[in-house]
Length: 95
Image 1 (spheres, helix red, strand yellow):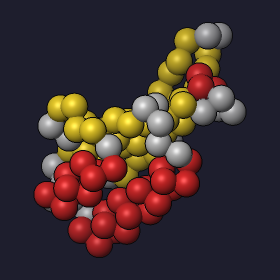
Image 2 (cartoon, helix red, strand yellow; image 1 turned 90 degrees about the horizontal axis):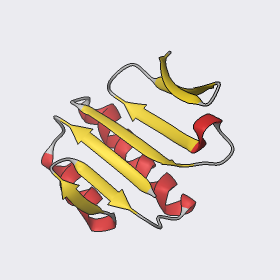
Image 3 (spheres, one colour; image 1 turned 135 degrees about the horizontal axis):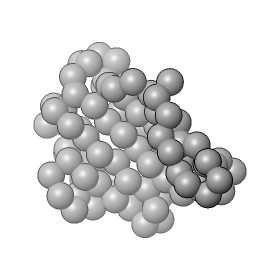
């Protein structure tokens, strides 16, 4: 499962993400079976646009068994965050 959440971004993000994922609420996009290759390409486009436009924030979350808590997180706009496992409790650490 891949989830992308946008906040205060241009309309182009909405159209692009809706072409690859289902918009379940304003600014919230999900895909149950997005491959890692497609996920990387989507993130590259979002990163390029954010670098150029610089408005709002974008977060992408997906299942990843190699990281603590089983969730990987990428973020644009707000301070970066890292998910940490503290004795079975998932915590978000700002970097």
